[in-house]
Image (tube, rainbow, N blue to C red; front, top):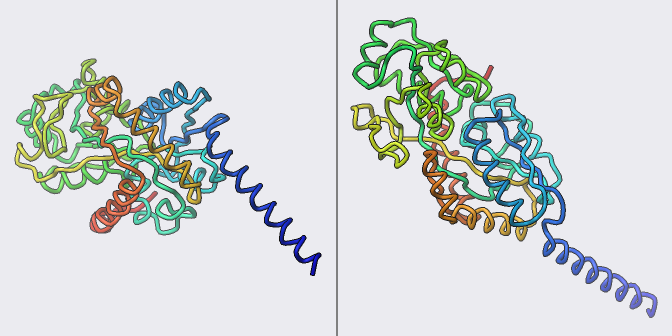
Length: 324
């Protein structure tokens, strides 16, 4: 009987010790390098937002926060890496609406489902898409755009950052609603804008932060924005609704951790990201790029992600989009 009591005392002490050690490890988080995986190539909106947040995290926490680009499979490669990672808060994912909300419906055989393998952490930004054309075709406004596509009917190509991404699905809806005869050319990420600038594509719906610098540099012309209202970064740019095209949607970008990550770590990550986005300098910078830094706690962002998946699933099915 005494032996049994000793065993009980031993395990009680062990559990207390492990509990204290676990609490201390969470309190000390982070105490080493954090890696943020970006599911797309460098230069795109996901990459831009991830690097801005990573830099601010590194300054605040005084640990390296590095960004690694892992493009491939329409964003699924980066998702899979983080979905299989140790849930300790040191491997995170910066991803967008496409891989998170659209790909689970688009791909019927995902080895890692982002809806179950990831823990939503924080919304990084809500971003409209801008209808852009290369300056080389001489189109500067909606009237000229319609005249151009009519004159070149059957010889129009539009690009996207991948099959099933918002840039693809918005372009698909746009072509349907306007009657434009155009062919879809999918890319793996930001490479699409390079072919657009070169004139190998005639139009594209691209996220505002990825193209506003190119518009300001005179490499692309902006025709319209897909958001419900005009954006502060380009207040003179009309919305599609204003032009008579019934489309009002965009993209969002967020930070995720592997499912099973300690809720205290997830909460700390969320609070840090929110405080970064609240800084006037950061907020103004994101707004100037066309990204709206909407603040959400973990529960709000988790609900947002689930609802967005439910919204896009029927649209993906209706589009008939198939992965390559």
